[in-house]
Image 1 (cartoon, rainbow, N blue to C red):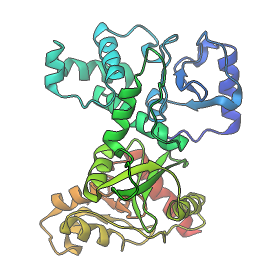
Image 2: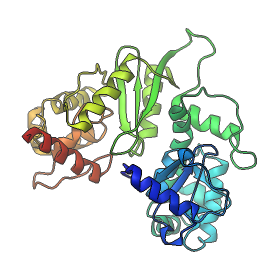
Image 3: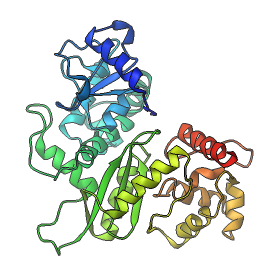
Image 4: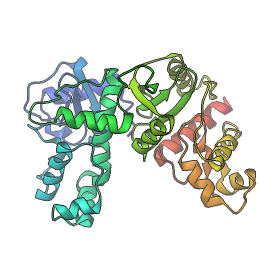
Length: 353
């Protein structure tokens, strides 16, 4: 999840790739920018130039970064062949990357959903749903990351259909309007951070969303945002996105731990009340969910407060990571508990300096 690799480590991995060093099998995956695929360390294909490589610690990171599994070395089938069920489902995902899987879909294929979940988790360290979501988000984020327009382009002959790509992207981000005055246009960009890539969405006047690309439920949050605002979300840049990039850089360097970028929060009245209260938690401090519930005037609504906390769409800016369990344990975080622990330690460290 946290692929903040040093240049030296990248060189080490590249040398292992060139030498097809089997000792690095499963240690890293390499994404090839010129082809859009990712491979394992001993892939027999012709080796790319170093500058065209991206290295990942997990397959899920590579998927979320928009790379697809290499058909030649089949990195998701290592170190031994996956079961026919897993191979079948991986093929189905590539056929329909925009699809959200339900138990009915498994039934239609004659596959037991509980078996799928168990086998995927054991085999890849992630559930099938997480795998399918990573591919779906990867399709959309590929365009965000590249800053390209949504165009009718065949991504890879015989493997991914251009129609599937367009549907996956437009389902999440919306289609660009035929006329300028048809609907509102929001810009979105990809931001690399020490804790992994983030995606930001903003108008010319305010930031609407900031989240790690592997955040639970991100695709649905983006869809809800564009539907509610009647907007199309297209790759691009503006002053607001430039500002949040700069402020994130300052935050992770420890130079400034607060944010001044204009924001617009969209949610129910209760959610907005919780999010505004979260912004009052000082840097380096933590509140419990019960403290937060009391602060919003509903001391018995801890569960509702926790749900609102989890639906925050402006990570770091609205510091939901500063809310922990009453017993002092970190508790949940949509961006992952490891990130939450890192953020709290980071803020405490620089506050004391």
